[in-house]
Length: 216
Image: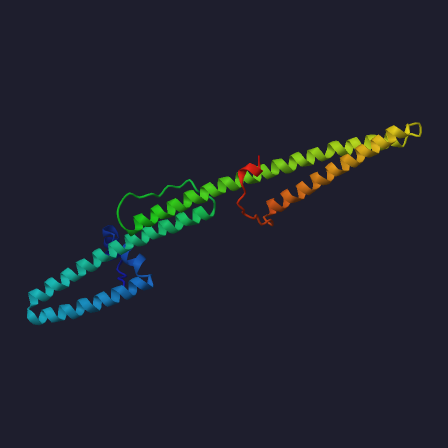
């Protein structure tokens, strides 16, 4: 049972023992590990006491020291894992500038380096996605602006066509121009719809091998 004596608690806190015990005791895996370790230590201590009292005391002391060292190391590993968890949460929120690379040896160091590599990849993808969105936004804005020109031109030509004094040749010319502007409008609207679908992510791109000479 965890001691309740305030004076003893203060002494344990100064030594760092209370913090370690209180933090780890809440972990189910650590509790199971402690129970098994204590059972093995108890069995070994009893067996050593049958040999001699001194042997039993030495074994018990060594077991307690090793258990405490193991708890300290386990707590350190859990703190490192907690830092990795916090790091991943920050990445999920879009913070890609954090550098947790570790040149030390060990599984945690390897894991940190691998996570950093994934972070760099995510950052590059986020930058590319941002550039694509800016490009699409500019393209849509440009097409929207280009739509105004043929519309204005057609308004002017329609007003001229309504003029009864306009010669037939000019009237036919304006009609041809209006048809040409309508075709241009249709192309612009189609392009705008395609860009909108790309921006919405509803377009599936098909990859194919094409000889470059056909593109020149």
